[in-house]
Length: 404
Image (cartoon, rainbow, N blue to C red; front, side, top):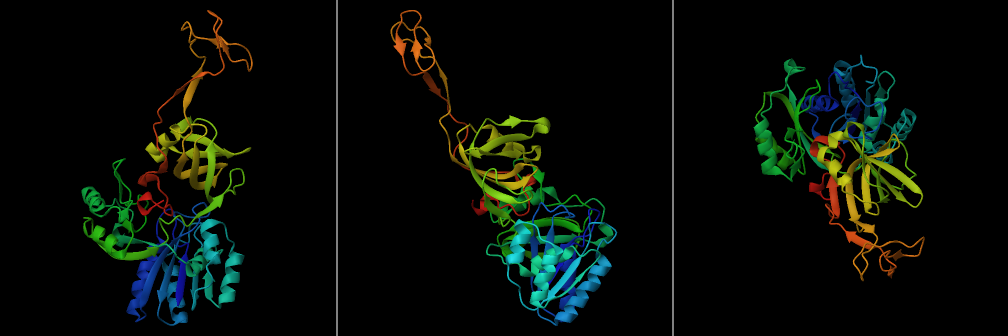
């Protein structure tokens, strides 16, 4: 059977994955084997999310009613009900429903009514706490289909340490990254010399290692020195897979969805207030603004190096009328150059315009030329893929170490 849970945390603490790890251990003690624990990231642009918009799914060998009642009991005891956006949902179903609802929850927006319809058709048991919005994520979790999957090794603090500064040895995290990359990623950000895998929020997570297999994330975790942990769990995830992206067209994008869009750069990049950088790309008359915000650090220089006429493919979430960039692929570069009146081949003087569409004339000796002098400039960038640094990467974004 499959058990889905969502929306138990709040900005002030708790974590749905932590509840899932504890629940897995309780079910095992009740002699119900847990075959898999999944962590599903859903649409990152949902306004009601508390933090990372994650839901969990446990695959369990056991009595559906007993598992469901145990899960509801744990949610009732651990969820942060005092926060207005904490509205847990619990779902138990014997067979996995079709994946359509999961795919919509990752790429678009779903309603509670849509979730309940899926659950009813599947004969599922379910319970929504408060307004029941967590049923959306819990339903998506049990519907999840992962043609591409990654893994995360999550460690959790002892409960008496919640809310206090975390103790994780910085050097050991860099060592773990050095010895396991590209099989693991986003443990640290080498270019910006900062740690990525240790959260700053007051939740139970101590740190997490993401990678391509359980063995690689476990190997990296073994190299990390830290405070004592209460629970450690390897999750199967959709993180780092670009599962949120759909193909889109400039000028025809929906707010809150995430896209792959191909277009031609229309103008040079502009640096605005706060160091945010923007460009416009288009196809014909349809133009879309693309943004690289200050937290993307050196990635902004990719936009600054683009010229009008460059052909690019961009990925990112469409919010506030802009694509918030995650990656850029430069397909082709336009010839970059400057034009000026030619030098007279007879006397060496600089020519001037002879009038509209009439070419150029030497005012000194009267010679004529049709074409201007073009000076080509070396480009500071090459075709290929570019990505935001680990410190600015969202959970679902596929890092280039996994391929474009």
